[in-house]
Figure 1 (cartoon, rainbow, N blue to C red):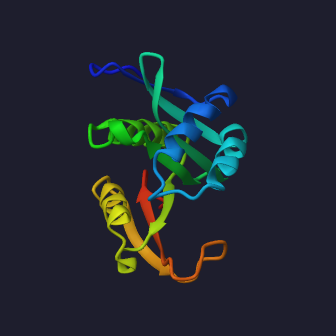
Figure 2: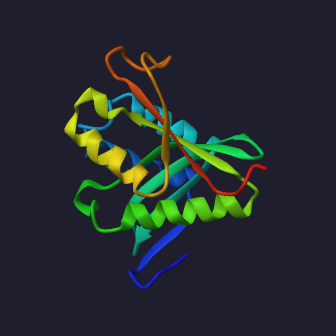
Length: 162
């Protein structure tokens, strides 16, 4: 998909790993250092997309198919100098359209719950909820997350399940 902005969304590839790692490295308020290894691994075993401008990767997202009708956005990030320009919105809209077109009914995303009081993630939570994701639960502690980091579970319905 190419829009009037010059951004292009395409499937992620193994050779995008360094660009994705560079984005993560520029966002230390959001990601810990061990995330790069997880992203390198997840980029090739799950569905992934990158958004580019020219030859530059501006952002990426990685989605795990949980069942034929359900998916989870595992990772999503936009380069720090490219945030708040609509790039993330364009990327996520493209991905949700692709998932819906392939029969996905519901998409989940996990993020830090607002009760944590951590300002960078307050903006992340707003990003998801303003794009139609609904907060359905908070889990503390979520297995695999550090204690003291309550997890907000958000979902978006892409089609009726009835």
